[in-house]
Length: 167
Image 1 (cartoon, rainbow, N blue to C red):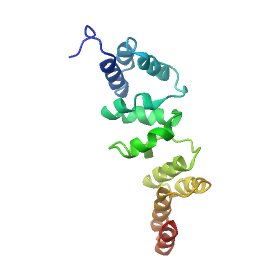
Image 2 (cartoon, rainbow, N blue to C red):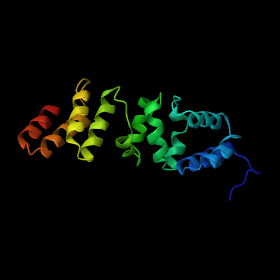
Image 3 (cartoon, rainbow, N blue to C red):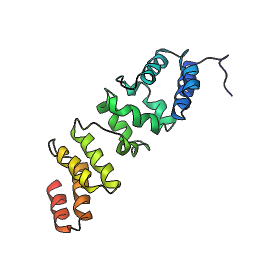
């Protein structure tokens, strides 16, 4: 086991995030308190659940640890969520994006919320989020969700039309 007698900021950050992901806030604080400025930044994030975060500063560590709970909690308040989105979409953690409680301040957030509701079988909520997404420029994701909803309602013709229009 790694001990504090051999401090290294990278290891301290990883261990702090590991303990946070597993719900041990006290152990996380012990590892983060003496880490570099990123450790202090993370401590601020956990002290106030409303602080905006720069998730890119720890994204690689979160991905390495498969820290889905932390990603789900921090992404909605990340000021750089647009920047990190392509990286997360290209990673094995892409499914976490559907579980995030997005605010819906842009089209892709609305689309993820619509997809989440669809996966849970809540068609009314899915349609509501899809309607909000339609206020923004179209995307492939939106076409897929719209076609899925049409198919779930047994409307193959509408689904075909949506896909053709999406092309």
